[in-house]
Image (cartoon, one colour):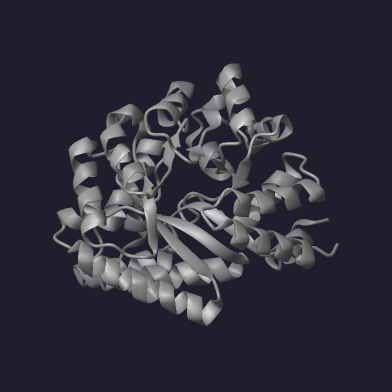
Length: 338
């Protein structure tokens, strides 16, 4: 099956995506609109090239924050959700859990309660218009320390929203050890919220262990340095703790993986670990969910039957109810007609 045939087929299969950042679905066209609204002038080609010239994880995070600074008001989130909707439709995604990071916006003077109102309005519109379910996970952010993370969680609790189901820990992994954020996670678990964490992206397997032992994370984002620890891989195989795999993202950072064909997802899958496929930041890494599955097929030798299982893993690893999961998995079987 060639690339075009593969993507055409897979686009018609209902899928879930569990590791994607809200601000990273905005296209270059969207970024240019934000820039013009903010600064009252067109973004130059030099500025565009400079903006997307990062070559490591920390450089990418800096650009991520720069784009957040281009927002003029909470109304700009309308644009972001419109682009999210387009992305979800084009990739055949029927369910997604999206990270949003409020810290930079709060520092800019945006009110959390105003952001949440727009989130709910747009998510409701997407559901009514497209039949797609969007849930959010607040990135409490390791980049700015535990005190800031606790402040974010306080707002999360003060202004509840049915669309926001839990918290995540993103940002510069090397600057914010997972165990430092245990107090925030303890509260989230006590309050009955979902809790996930980026770990093992560019820090060793100890980061994953800490996310398991201190944060009691219900999913691990990236998790690729588990390949360095046999005992950890055995533990993940036994517990079926879901790992959110982001191949293009991991290949870009080159911390562990230099080429897609060397990504450990193949070994993780063969061991029986619960892996699911995601993009992380599709616009920043010039990819899509369909393209990530194509990489699995074309470069990592996943068969079509295995691709089907990976698609099902997306739903199995989600925070959908068991009834919803079974319904979604049945829909995959019904749509899968090779």
